[in-house]
Image (cartoon, rainbow over all chains, first blue to last red; front, side, top):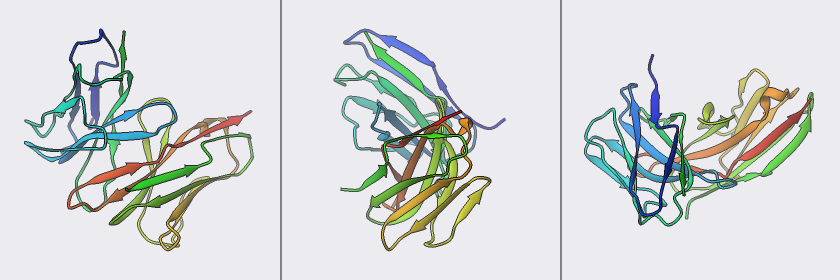
Length: 113
Length: 112
């Protein structure tokens, strides 16, 4: 079955620690995205990548980093520089062709203790 | 700055009611407008609109786009409790790449 997966589902970390959220897709999509969702604020774009070895900052990239070494994988690292990291993180992918319907993973809920 | 604004932010209706959700946008290099439904975790795709005045339908849901007035509406007729969800509007912009701007969402609750 084709799809997009994220792990872990829930993640707890102490202040000052870096954590990495996994995102994998087997849809053969070129483009991948990371969003953050806070209550009442919809989805805000953190980073996106259109092709392997290339990625662009979104609206709220500070305190986050990504890599895109493989087409299937787009991990997100939440660094200790992110001041308010507790949130729901969604990864998505799209074909990257003219019309950009995105397919979302199930999300990771990160809580900083 | 590109923005997508949805209204109302939340809505409570009774089963059988008809609801209209609004989405207005100010986005440079508009390419398409998309509606998603988010029930618990992952948003799922509902509609993609690219042309003005052409209604898209799927069962009890329908949507239309007005590119002159820069808005879209999502209608749900004969609502059911299973329609309770957050409805997200997003605009895809042609930035030379692929960038999607999401609205804050409308939280719909349908009472039995």
